[in-house]
Image (tube, rainbow, N blue to C red):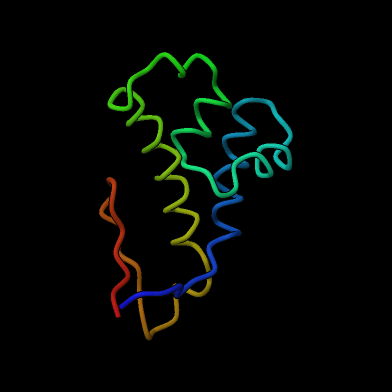
Length: 98
């Protein structure tokens, strides 16, 4: 199956708003700067101290944003529809079960 099953924009914005709060930055500025870009690139721009890290060293920082995003998506009303459900393994993965 391919395609968009859930509009995740609200969840994505919630995740980046959380990062903005952590950094003491306006959420709307962070959201505007992050759309359409990879999390690793966004984090390096938003947190300059991370720029010197390798991709492997960045993994824990990217995973934290991914965890926030996954939790935000899981709490979306659309995913409580009995036709499908979302399963999050607590790590890196979540699966949509039809």
